[in-house]
Length: 549
Image (cartoon, rainbow, N blue to C red; front, side, top):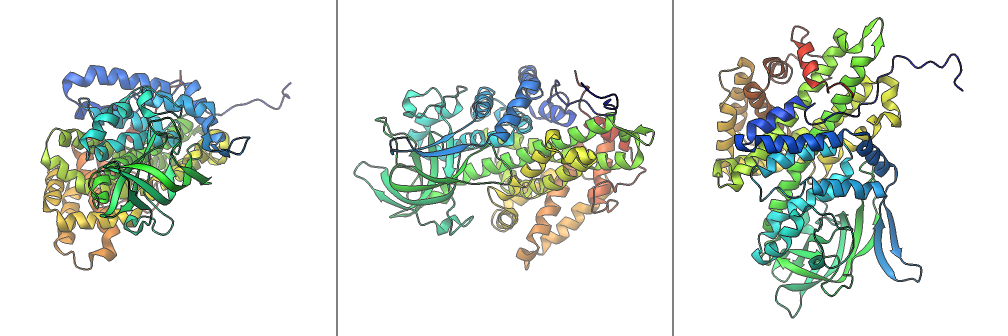
């Protein structure tokens, strides 16, 4: 029995029982903006259904359970036979099945598929981000497999399937399949050209035997993996099936699982190849060129994932402050807290707006729009660099909005904080992205032209954005010694692009706050330093999730 002093008051109710999609005004507006009108009704109904699932008590519980019960490696069975299997909590399988059935691996062949999937992926990240890793790699494997039309015809329908089949058996017997990848090695990291795994040709054309190791192999229980290895003709991409066509296990020796800061529900492994059967994807020596499409797609998913984490962090902070009282007023109504929440909200909306714009560019590029394809070449590494870096400070500041409650595991905020650096590190850390931006600027003039055309669509609408564009043009005119300032350049490119998008598409109060705080020099280094003369109350209200049912 509770004591008479234990009356619970002044606590926010849990943020559950709501539609994560319709509660996100920036996301719903982006979907409607970037989809053809004829797709609106179907897409909005589909995404709202997923949004209700994401916000449900049951799905949120699955996310917490998957995080609290990380995968376990079993290298041998009871008799000493090598099995190399990773066991997951049932909640992991429930989430993965839901993600597959929601179309998170089937964007490439449906109208508006990338925009629809991007919105779904951004929401699904808010349930449990670790589960998004195999979904992302399965989706991203498609452009790499298309380097071999025969392989693409065989595998693409399995990857796009909405059926989750967890059993390890030949892919030809499965209604759906998942993909992982293994690119990096312990001696090379992001420098995949330093890979030492060898590939020896076998008698059957296009087949090889691999020997070597991979320092990071994500989702080791997948049905197939794209890996890089050295064939006689140079670094080459290979498809490694987990189970061979005759039903025997391929040689796939899992040495250990990584003990990670966050992303605890997802298995990341170190694996050894020792006579491992593989099928070549693309030509010998073209490994990097073959996988670059996969890398670009996973980098966009890093942007989407970070945008999703930021959105959840901001939603939790605004929700808490709308209920919590201190010093005689709701926190959300107090000027300084309102400034913090508004600052966080514009960062989140800028990330979401940019991420969905890139997804729309993917749809257009798939339809043959070369300008959009060129835009992706520079905008993807720019967004990957900047949006993923903003995720951690947003998550930490949002947790602080909950005070001590935000430092307690039950709030869910520590999980967001631990997850927040991941997308900046994986798929090429900050320096890799910044240098990739320089390469695009130096080698692909159409990419810069597409970027400048895009940001120029907002010229004349805001004097701070106009000044930022002029300053950026000055920086771009002199790329001498550019490597040492590559991060600064990537940051400026990202902020100007976000500013242009918000000026064109966001409500005036959001665009005004962004341009003041990010482009006009009226914001400080910490969140909560926007000019108080702005309409911050409207910004915060726009970011608030709908009332809990």
